[in-house]
Image (cartoon, rainbow, N blue to C red; front, side, top):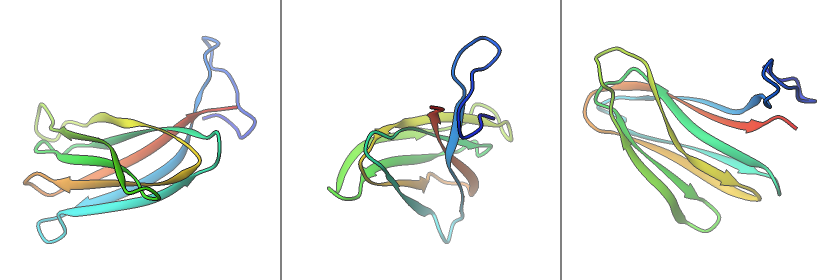
Length: 119
């Protein structure tokens, strides 16, 4: 991965740097979880979710400091126990944000990653 100073990949394209890494385990008893994060002025981040849960979940991206929903997606897998990912959306700072996942039916483990282009 890119060092703090940034680098370019073999093709000359900028690498991505993980700036948010949160594992959310959703169960029948705890079918909804959220994670709060902040971005500085000028920071940009793309949020994605990775899972093997075929029945999927819904994901919301909220602006915490204004209370407004920025985006909401529902996602499901194609095959049982096959990993897949979906992009939730992109955010630009400054501000406080919340990503919220809600289970559709079956329990699952979801990895939320936030990436930014290395500077």
